[in-house]
Length: 170
Image (cartoon, rainbow, N blue to C red):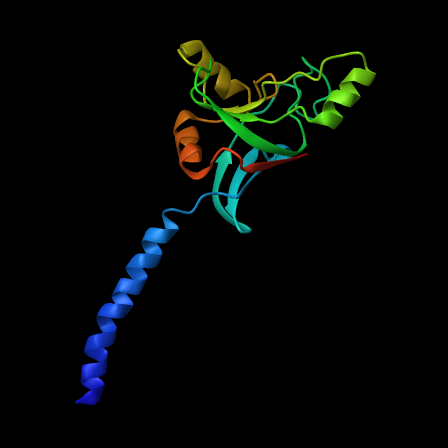
């Protein structure tokens, strides 16, 4: 009788514990965004565990670190996603904190501007049929940003908060 009584009491507690852990997992936010340029992939992770992976497009000249404005490169290194750009030419955009002090110094040595306005963003607003066919033919099309499908951008904004670190690798 005691064993039966114990199981009846423990079963509801066990079910409650599982339900609580499921609801907590739905609240997990990425603590790191990693872009691997050579793979054309972006990874969202939390405490070292990958939560989501996305296919991305980069700048038209993607190999190497962004040095100056207009070089069509996506920067490399550690930055922050420092604000959500509400008024973008693209479907939703998160700003990457490029350029940092070193980027500015290096560009200044060349007598140029480092550029800026590097974003993770969706597709262009008001895209037309020509753009969809363009995307099928060309992988990298941005001026140095990290682009993705609009539906993917919606997911990213649910999982990534302003202030999250982004690590952009070659």
